[in-house]
Amino acid sequence: MGKVFKERTSVDEALKLFLEHISTLRKVEEVTLESCTGRVLAEPVVSERNVPHYRRAAMDGYAVRASDTLGASPANPVMLQLSDQIEEGSTSWVHTGAAVPEGADAVVMVEDTATAGNLVEVRAQVYPNRNIGQVGEDIKKGDRVFEEGHLLRPCDAAVLASIGFNRVKVFKKPLVAVIPTGDELVSRKDNRDVPPPGKVLETNGLMSALYVEKWGGVPRCTEIVPDNPDSIKKAVETNLDADMILLLGGTSVGKRDHAPEVVATLGELLLHGIG
Image (cartoon, rainbow, N blue to C red):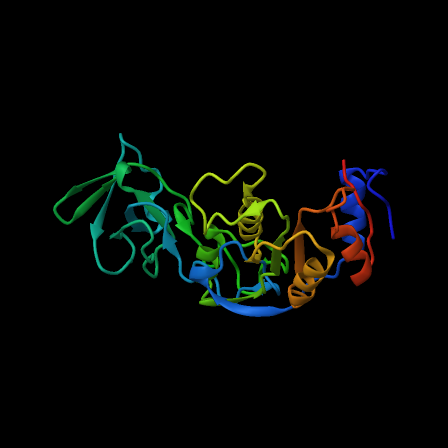
């Protein structure tokens, strides 16, 4: 029958024993990015595109050929002509995140410039690739962005969107049946008055169901089950389609504590009593 209640098992030992006897759930479903937070990836995610997919300006300023700014300083500025195309001696305005024009290999920050009509006074020398985000700088095509088993966060949804994903494969949430037991329990849904002496409102089922939901499961809370073996057994058997059953109450060694014997008749009682 397993360990009895008088032989308390430590939490660490109980957890180890529990993990040794459970199987991993492998059911998979596809969800939208809008509903993926808190879900667990069922497969690795490999990027099929570069991010960014173009050379982008990292600053507001002017796209230039770095060689045209050689020696530029506040005391010795270089004058460049505003133009739609980048050629020797010309420049184009770019804002942060904009595509860098063909022919330019650097961006001069606007703080290091001044304008006079169609002329731009460059007061700082820049080197090739200065203030430019290169193609694939954040994510390269073929990169493994996330591994199977990754717990998705809101920021991960943004990353997935940036590489072209609208949906993602995740493991299905486990269905957890929550069964409160006890003759002393009164449903809080049916009774808003103070219960009579010896009766208490059932609250552990509510708390357990909310914890199941918080930790990534789907709770299914049953009605209160009375303290008799047949009723408890029937409640458990009715919920065998669940991935896990939480049987609340009736686990001590009193005359009305029938949960251990019911569990033992339906399967293997690994341990009884944790502390």
